[in-house]
Image (cartoon, rainbow, N blue to C red):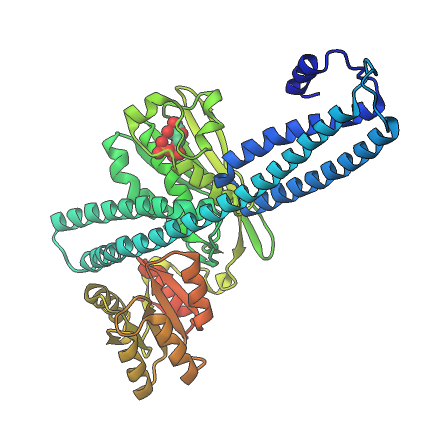
Length: 506
Ligand code: ADP
């Protein structure tokens, strides 16, 4: 029995014979009610944190319990009346009918309160939903505002480093490139956090060159590593496939979080990034990724908490190393969403190893690519006429230069309206379409172009990563999208899906 009820019986009904069956049933129902009340209170307090599915389960539970209580009250009422139809004031040691009815009234009143709680829960949920919508809109706008200039910076660095630049200029460019890439990673972490938390992300199936990806990650972290006198080594299985199909952005995000932690918590030591093939069949390959360091290590009691959001191993960590405590929770969640777990082996003072495995679809073109050296190849878009629709001058010139370098014939339109007029006049093999533009946005322009030509490939260029945007892109009739800032490799790989082009040797 609930402790509060025991105390109340001792206080108010000291002389009552508790063995009576009807009374036992009543006390059981009251006790259950106390337990439920406590739980309801806890749930209301946490209403802002429960997910849609949990919320539905809670609501169903509440309703079921209310029904049960109603049922037991009716039974008790009937039992009480049968037991004691005409209670006399002289009956000592037994519960009087009037008192029982009081308790029942009390119980009924409590049920009304539970119903009220249910309504409160509903209101809390609605409030939480609208605030989460505002948050998601805010993040989407921020995402666009921050990623758009970053897109231009990263693209121009790429173009400049292709020019014959002086050696010192090249070093500066590399530094700017690394810093902007780091800034982009940080922005991605912060902006993506709520999306990842809510599981509102879709994983892409695009070609990943695993070796290049790891080398790029090593390069991006080299400066930070050397500042702490750490050495980064990459150890790749001889037998790795040239390409796999998966989500490069998310995989890099996971690895980058682990690598930057390894560097941060190691001084004058070794960081190694290892990739091994675990298994393979005709269509899939499973790879294990490991990030090892010889740094400060993690105490056994901290091993589980560090994967929680905003938590660090101990209070000293923030003072010494800074950090948001978001990195590992993003890693954990991104892997969970793909049905995988992050593993950790660590010893204080000796170092840590974070590892996970991941399955990928194999690249069906792999056999035809085998033997070709991708580093000696350049994208070739000869004979492809592209309409590039982009209002930001810097971004459009950057993308145009990149595409022209690959020998494409590129024409620019500053907004959707101009693009529509140009499309009516000439044939284009492919359209690259920005979304947010003055006069006519990319979605409207796509719908209008689609009504004229259902086939021409249209690829969105978007700085927004929101779920809503991805849905809009799909339903407007676009074939694909590229997230800004895009790397040249993924731009070419996406275009290659829609027009017949290849890499050529140079
Ligand atoms: P942040 O690095 O911003 O603090 P994370 O979520 O990435 O946030 O990491 C949480 C905590 O886990 C860190 O504060 C640190 O205490 C611990 N940690 C993560 N990686 C390592 C590592 N390689 N070596 C030692 N401690 C680590």
